[in-house]
Amino acid sequence: MATLNSTKDFSPVEDAENIKKACLGWGTDEKAIISILGHRNSFQRKLIRLAYEEIYQEDLITQLKSELSGDLERAICLWTLEPADRDAVLANEALRKPILDYRVIIEISCVKSPEDLLATKRAYRFRYKHSLEEDVASRSHTSRDIRKLLVAVVSAYRYDGAEIDDKVAHLEAEILHGDISEKAFNNEELIRILTTRSKSQLKATFNRYKDIHGTSITKDLLGDPADEYFAALRMVIRCIRDPKKYFAKILRCAINTKGTDEDALSRVIVTRAEKDLKEIKELYMKRNNIALDAAVGRDTSGDYKAFLLALLGDDEINN
Amino acid sequence: MATLNSTKDFSPVEDAENIKKACLGWGTDEKAIISILGHRNSFQRKLIRLAYEEIYQEDLITQLKSELSGDLERAICLWTLEPADRDAVLANEALRKPILDYRVIIEISCVKSPEDLLATKRAYRFRYKHSLEEDVASRSHTSRDIRKLLVAVVSAYRYDGAEIDDKVAHLEAEILHGDISEKAFNNEELIRILTTRSKSQLKATFNRYKDIHGTSITKDLLGDPADEYFAALRMVIRCIRDPKKYFAKILRCAINTKGTDEDALSRVIVTRAEKDLKEIKELYMKRNNIALDAAVGRDTSGDYKAFLLALLGDDEINN
Image (cartoon, rainbow over all chains, first blue to last red; front, side, top):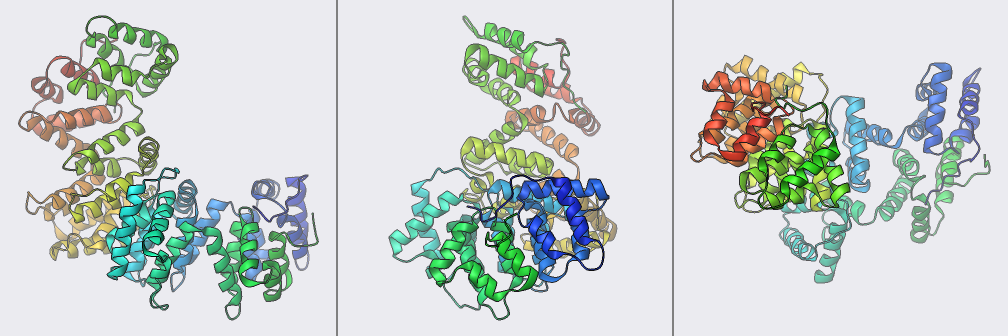
């Protein structure tokens, strides 16, 4: 469930006008912007952006970029984009980093439904005049194994029905176990299974793996913690097996890292606030003995903090 | 341009009734069925199928399957399916053969536009409860290299704009040439380029290749004629570079092979009759000094021949 408290009565024109007002004059009224955009759902934000464009002949996001800065700017701009377009921007951002942030690519590829992943790939092509696969595949300075894995997960257009073939689950659990035992982690069979089978089928295969061998596949994949390929493989499995648990973990790492990883923090809160952030918060609480809101409040400050708390459904302004 | 002569005034209900009439009683009136379906475009056939279902509570294709047989049955049933669904059926048929017919998979993946390929993959998932990638990837008894190439072309969701990067074309022409000179045909770079770049970009790269090295890339790839991986690579390049020429060649081979390859003959005529069969016919004439209609007429017989000639726009019945 979502954590966002969105308003029921709203006028896109009034919102657009109020945002413009907050941007005029000396300095920007960040609080006003947060109180509006932090309480509008995806469809409402779309209408505000259309109204803003219509009234001021200017793109709302361009305006926000020129008025805001730092973590707040990034978070609000991501939030204002439509989901598929936002993920395209996140993927491109990850690809342009000196060290490719493979987590983002895996997250987008393995958490989203096949149709949503497709919408993101379509948005990416529209924005960057390249396909996402193409940019992942031609990315140099990335290890060959990781690149191979990323191209395969990004290209996947999995079946998304609930049907499961038990025989296949058993057979492929054994193939995975064989590859892992022989340390053939970049074996094509392993990659084929993880990147082409439907998520329901893979969950059945992972369960079968545990039934037969007594340990989970991710435990068996715990290799050298510094080996990024291992980490990427485990991440693919986690994103497919239990995305909420995965996101709770990403939030924990983002908050616990020295200096806070604001990029990851904003990414998860912005992308999940209208989906399953409520359950992610519960998992976070259970695992860390502190509420996510409290942890975020402790680690961030100012308007950025106010905005994240608004998306977490934990602020006093209930617009 | 299309070769199909479709009628302008038509009633889906009347057509459905006339097809039913042709199926009733002793024997089937194949000529009546051909005179109707052989002169209806894709949208008209869809309406006939809907009308048939509505009136007789029976699927038209199931009915046709029970009334017709052999090459005529296969051709008319393929023709009656919607294009994306038809390609899904063709792909599945190719995958179920004892020796995988990789030509069909390459054709579908490399000739269709990215959006049409996607529609086919969606139809495949709907029909077979598996993704097409998954079934290609898990296909055993196929050489590892061919499978790797097929999975990559099937998974591609290329950018389809006209923008070209000349620097990339030059650089990648040299990478391709390097791999080919070193006989590293299954090199990942070669596969990456062929399967992720946009078709416009690839055409520029192939041209650059010829400019620099004086021979075309397909000529440089002429290896052992019995090596299927070479043949598959050349086919990928040909389908991207010039699909019409590719189809003219497939028709030539289908007709000139001992006993005629009816599967390929029907496939090309059925899938191209509403697209570019006119230009394919011209290319065929130029290369073989015989009109395609005459060649088809010589090699086939009976109702099957009548149906193919109808799709080729060369029959006396102009319904």
